[in-house]
Length: 579
Image 1: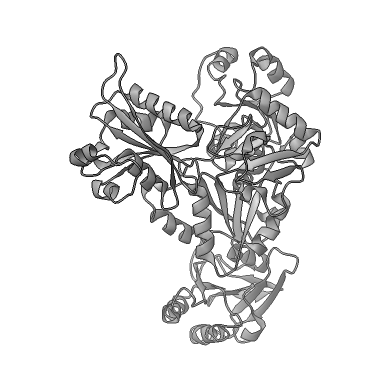
Image 2 (image 1 turned 180 degrees about the vertical axis):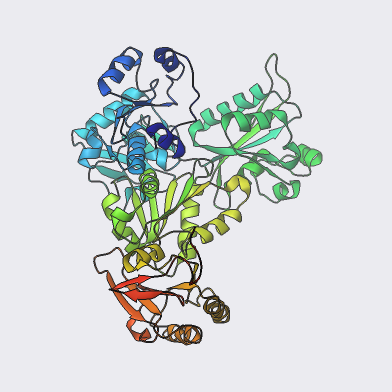
């Protein structure tokens, strides 16, 4: 497949529109800070082409260069602040190439202070000069002080970062080198989305007045606009043009609440006039608190703003801060099938997803197998084997906060993996509360077992899990009977454990009623791992006590046979003709 088609298919570039235009003129139209410009060609030629356009980190796009064979990807410009290094890792993983990273942070295993917050859904503020100075100090080995008052602290990881030391959140952060929170303090800041703007509002108020009122309320409280999670008001204001436009142009979620819900909230500044008009003594303060949730608190009481010349209406603004960030529109939940365990069997698509995510959630064993791929800026969340719902819920919570999250299953996440549980939880959320969702397939145990055994899946087959923890045994038994009667090649997952030691023997009894005793059976254990083993036996000789939860049992159909150590199922039944 041609390289550009591969990039398009993988979603790394937008659909290409043929244009009869000089490349220099075309580049002029894309040279903006929010863009990513990917060249396929020689680094020298690209350098000469862009040299005169370079204006500074705050104005330049991320620029990457990919060789014509797709083997090497070089982030040439905007490595941290514009995300070029991150893009290079993702493209390299997906194409099976190599990212040529020359930045000191990557080579020295340091946290990229000016870039890491983006993956957690935070927004950055501070001048380019201040951020540059901070990065220089970090590269020189200076200790960097961090004050964090909001947002997840898990970015630090259990091992921490040697050059970073934390200031107690209760202390005044003015002296900190890096500030993480809603207030506008310090020179270099990351802002998790924790602020909810409550708005009380006369009909047809000018949008410019609303914008000015919000800006003044933020300035009065010393808060950053970058920390806004969304806006909130009364339900009867949901169709107000100014609020809808503000939500659309600023990408701020817009929540509304019924008057009885607003009336139930204790606020510091109730108004009898508002009660008579609206049926609640507060709109702005009550809406802000409701949007911020149970642990939210009012951080800026209501302020009333009147129209200037050319404006109309009136607006009341209050600000509350939530305990947790809320930015599902920035969050991503990636269901990653990690394959059997050998990294060589991990798909490029899965590697690219892992590279993109700052948070890896999964069972400890699976995370251990992927550990060679994890960077210092990526944090693992280890879970227990039987706590699947807990892992799904944790991954979803992080993604709703704005983080890019990988929820990891062994094999294929869509086959006895986490994809179904995660999607069920996602669909229980209101549509506006859902982060983006993607499933990245992996090689299942069934596929690798078949590859190791020879060619057992040349005809119809099915899979049955013998675990009755989530499925009643009566249902499992019915499926086994149907599979046996239908003469399917059968793959048995979760065949036997210490607490479930009889199910495999019962499954054998069912199959023996329908298949010859000589039917070949492959026992594949710890596939794709150092302890891998494979045994070819027969249905009659199958010993359930020799099987455990790390084994996949592959049972042939009536036409399958064993020969010279291989298991093969003919492509068709006797008498059938192959076209």
